[in-house]
Image (cartoon, rainbow, N blue to C red; front, side):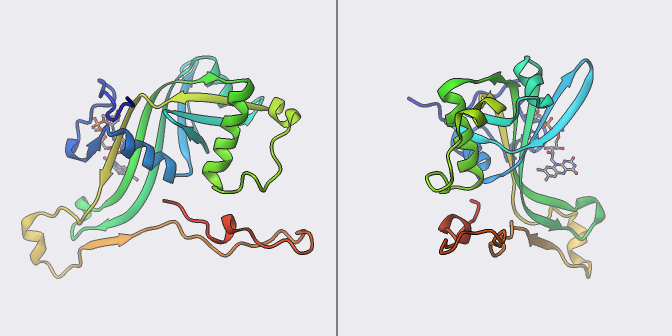
Length: 218
Ligand SMILES: Cc1cc2nc3c(=O)[nH]c(=O)nc-3n(C[C@H](O)[C@H](O)[C@H](O)COP(=O)(O)OP(=O)(O)OC[C@H]3O[C@@H](n4cnc5c(N)ncnc54)[C@H](O)[C@@H]3O)c2cc1C
């Protein structure tokens, strides 16, 4: 039976606002699947690095990809301990007090080690990255060829030691502040999707595909 709840560890156990935390695998996966960018941090020779990357997910693994010389991927493949953060911003929480300004969000933090992947898994992982960023495009766009596969590096990162944290709702005010003549509430934020713009070189008769016209996250 598939794991439904991740085991909290000393690193992933929330101490601040524990009630906002979750180790539910479906919640962790849903946040990872909706977000587009992961911030990947690792330490090499005492130097911390933090690199934004896109990714794909297959079951309980994230996959990061890049050029074969990619420094971050090489460090992960070489066994650098890593921490990954993925964030969805849902709103600005508008407090009546400067101290209580906040944000509504859904985020995931993962700890672990990466591992380089090759062969069939590498191709499947690259497709998972494409499918994550532009769902529905595989099957229409040209598949990755063997030369492109050789030029790419792919690292697998297990979703095992991970936590989600979710803040929703209004500001948490000092009781006396509700009487102030100051507005409080939330400004919701969403990712705005614009109209697709062609690159000026679209072959005659090629329509804008549904994966572009109906693009949305979540
Ligand atoms: C967009 C955004 C903006 C934020 N802005 C601020 C800010 O300005 N100031 C501030 O204090 N906090 C902010 N937070 C909350 C912040 O991420 C931490 O949760 C909070 O600072 C508590 O940190 P801590 O190290 O004391 O947490 P602890 O509870 O001690 O963290 C222990 C473990 O809990 C897990 N955890 C903690 N936070 C998160 C998280 N956000 N998502 C997933 N797992 C988590 C991790 O595994 C972590 O190792 C923000 C969060 C987001 C997503």
